Length: 325
Ligand SMILES: [Zn+2]
Ligand SMILES: [Zn+2]
Image (cartoon, rainbow, N blue to C red; front, side):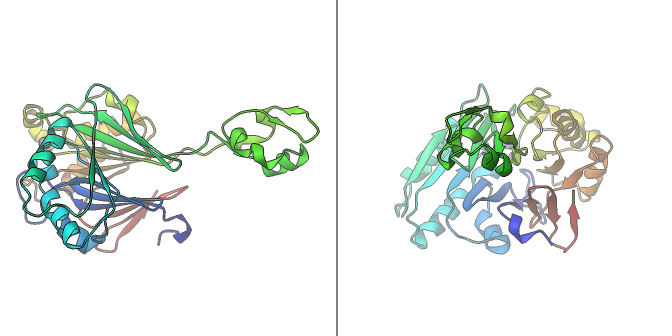
């Protein structure tokens, strides 16, 4: 079982299919719980049912939609209607492309019953990596993708100060506690005796922040590796197998091997592949293809929970099987 002390960053896959419906794979949606915040990534049709099954219908703080295609957004009306029935009052922040935000505004105008909660919309730019949101716990970035409509991916990254305090050194040099925050940011300190103490003598480098990238739908874009450098877990679409690479190219999608190439280039720790076309009845075969390039590849599947702990990653599949890295 995952370490209970470490359960502050968890991803639950709600939908792992692509546009054409399949009976066992649902449209794109995931819920991310991060240090008390609930973030919904995409909201394909039926998202609310999958939330009921694998998580809960508790209100969400933020919704990040990759693009306006139906398999990524059509779950929002049902979910918002339910939130209103439940009397949700807390504001929801909705992030997406301008097309998707426009779609949402139109939908809102047609509602016969007004929403019970305010929705604050935020447009993600399409030309560069962009910091969409930041607080003391996390940063959320959007990154432009290449698809048949405007699309963006997201990176959710733990916000950590660059340095951590060495408590013994702090005592030894008699540093007042009111300087701790600036010391963690890398500044030198002044001891109670008035002596300047170089930062390196009282701090250690902090650990690498945990991060999760959600990349769908897109062509294989090698340049994305720069944006995704050393992400802890990368979810990347793998709509097609290598056999159908031509189709992937024509429809603005990636193959499993291309997803694996990107994971390898970016030196991520673990790759989840999803958005699998309904034509594949054995999606494990796509995982096998990807593992030839990037061995730490796993299949995204409805009900899968991925825990990003401080020093390991746990995967818990709905059939009870578990893996850790
Ligand atoms: Zn799609
Ligand atoms: Zn699409």
